[in-house]
Amino acid sequence: MAKKAGTGGTGAAMKHFLPVTIAVTVLWFLPLSRCLMASRFEVTEIESSSAPISTSESLVDREQDVLRQFRDLEKTFLRLADLLATSDPRRSALLRSVFEQARNEELDNRLHTIVTLLAEGQLLKAGNRQSSAIDALKQLLDLLESGDTDRRLANTKEEVKQFLARLSKLISRQRDIEGSTEAGGKEPQLSDRQNTVADETHRLSDDVDGFAKRMEARDSPTARQQSDPSGDANNSKDSDAKDSDAKDSDAPSQTSEGSAGDSSKGTADDKGSESEPNNESSTDKQEEAADNNGDDESSRARRTKKRLAAAEKRMRAAREKLDQSQRKEARSEQEKAIEELETARAELEEILRQMREEEVERLLVLLEVRVRAMLRAEKAVLAGTDKLATPSQTQSDRERQLEASRLAREQGLIGNDALKALALVRDDGSAVAIPEALEQVREDSAQAAARLTRGDVGGTTRGILEDIVLSLEEMLGALEKAQREQQSKAQNPSGGRPAEPEEQPLVDKLAELKMIRSLQKRVNTRTKRYAQLLTDGAEQVEEPELFEALDRLAERQKKIERAAHDIATGRTE
Image (cartoon, rainbow, N blue to C red; front, side):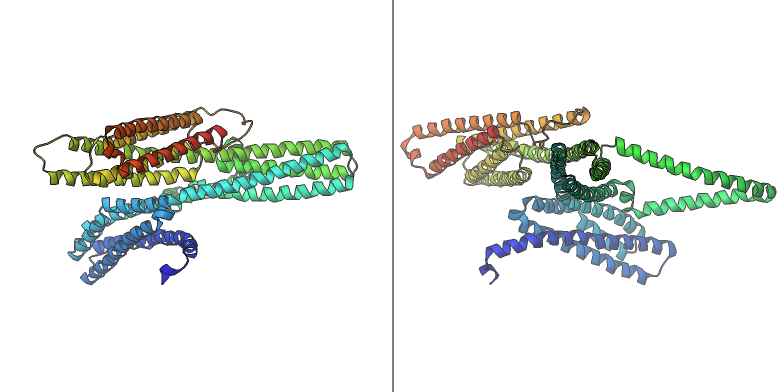
């Protein structure tokens, strides 16, 4: 009955349901890790206090419950990955990566071993195994939570863009008021307009201040330390021990000196009370210097807030001058307010630029790792195909068919990886040639896998595999070049504000054009290859697969033409 329902409603429901399910999956890790940590603590207590066997048996039951929860969690990873395969390939790939890492770490076997050790009463070995299992679970949790990084960054970027839009409107309105003041507009009306803009500037300043506090809380070391309370506990214990040692060592001197210590106490207290304001003022100066010199998002946001507050102050002063009919002085304050607003806008634009740099850097690394792995696997498939194409007397037809089927499965996996990489690039939306190249790799992988499945290792199949290798090599070179340029830009930042701020593309136009040229060359090469097949014999002309290949080639030519047009017209900028 559920399948008969409308697909639109189901898709909308899944769109809202899946992120919640993923969040629940993340939260599932927390009690699982805490349960294992509590079990580890109890093992230590039992080992040190020689607890009765019944207590150890209860630990076995609890450890078995942890094992059961983990196995259920593994199944959840796979179910969610299958559900998200078409709607959200990136999250699907992330969940499969978590599942694969859990299998590589052999967490299921390790937890089962802990249960066995507890049942046998080998508490020391069980405790050591639990420590390593806890570390492995934390790594899985970190990997799972890393999937929300892009979403948080996108939300932060959108918030800054909204700040910029509001600020640009304020600048436009303030310039209009300044122009009306110069043109001799009515002062009461100008005063009201100035007051309205000042109020809106104040609201924007408050919003930016809240944003700065959130960024500061996110980047502060204390926020990171809160996730590791054991470290704080150890530090507090150490400090308490030091304090007690210091008190013990000072006790004899206090009894021997007596009144001398009492007579000097008042002087010391006076000095301390005098130094407190100095310490506070020096701390404020250090924080202000950090705000003025810092290049991180929170520092720039705080500077933006200060500039907005200064602009509001100038606007209030301009209104007072207008109320007093001091038009010239009002214009001077208005011009200074515009300068403060422009400075604030430059800071927000720099925040956006830095966010984009971080986004591009992370995406380039992800793509480079994925494309490199695809290239390595593709070269292995090509080598295996070349080996099968060479006549061998030691290999039976059955063995050759089985090997061809294995290569077809490997080729299919490469096509799936290309689809995942394609989802990453399309989400970014700043490149044209790379998505087209990945799309062609995916299509060629499907075509090559189909040919290998039926045991076709002829020249056409090998030609398709060679095209895939060339395409991946060119993509890898473009990504590595973009990474080098990104690192060089980070090491040697150019000063000054750009004349027209624009979002940094994933790769530059030159790299895109080179890739388009390579795509066109491969179309030309394949056209010649098919033309040769057509001239070889009439029976090949009537082969349906060849006609389908020609149709795909024609469609590919149209896509290349469209991509070149998009690059020429700057559609991605």
